[in-house]
Image 1 (cartoon, rainbow, N blue to C red):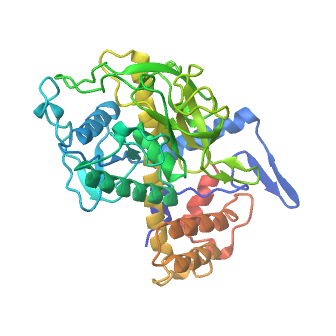
Image 2: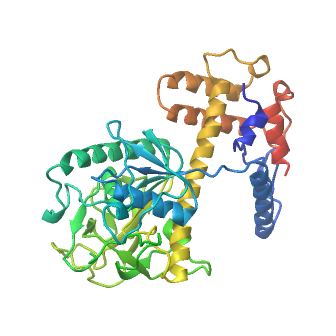
Image 3: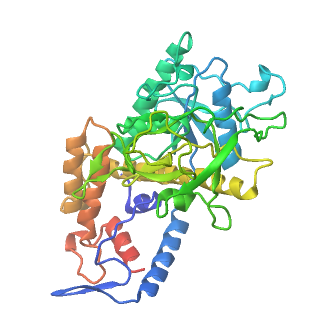
Length: 446
């Protein structure tokens, strides 16, 4: 059985209103602040630093759904540029019927990079993989795109490959939404993410946001500066506005562009077909960036309901971070402005760190669920512990189901236990020797 120390080691934190730094509680008196706002902030940072130092979060790889093409050159680009930009390992998430192939384009086309993938071949998994889930672009648009671009409609031998890829990406996105896994969709990959929430895309006029030549790796292994760029306006107070900054804290106003469609809006700010949530009926997805020039690119089918500036990025309002962006943050390096390289690298690493936190939560949940497994005898010291009783009851309900049940069991147990960890209250006798409880109370004293 996992001990309280194990749980804390894997990132478990139990806190409640009576254990929150800066607050106290007296009989018949509501909790009230003891410190100033600055003092509470300073104490919070102190506690956070101590917990972070004691419980470091493991750096996870980035999982990329496999881009199956004839030679594997697209998948090679995905892993090479992601590794080079973030300094992280990558993994392949693939369809059960696919044997992944990654091949440097220079082996088929002279004048382009020929060499091995830094860090060696990525591991391959049927299914999820670990850390951030990344969905990349490709040659084909959504079936719902209006109007369909005939140059990007799958046909011939590519149909079977594309069908497998679409089925796999839809499955992985569904699992990510059910388990709270962070997702980043890049260029055409953002359309697949949008589609998973019920959205669709709208075509734009030729020679607007397309590019004459797609980015590629030079013989030196750096990204060639060949793609067109356009201006960008990032929406303030969004995740993107926090993540997409250079070392000086500035957000670039130019990004590369290589797409022929954008997210469709039913009215400005409302992504068509996506869910509305809560009593205020606000959209789950919000627009986080637009093209910086009014009317650029002009939509093929323009209506007065559409915003004059196209959607260049969107993100979730609630839950795990999910972003869809139209540009290629992995395609910066070499001769690009230093501020652009820094901001795009920071964006990718920001999302990768969200993947780290996701895996830490899953790891903690795994250890916690083992302690509350109703198929095992409860330790005598926990027989009277209501928190574990609630958790075991929920675990009983979740047997044979996915990890969401175990996560809910953890939340219920933490909520119940938090009622007792306040250092200003007497502890229940039956918890006097409970190591996990004592550690929680000790943390509450910080």
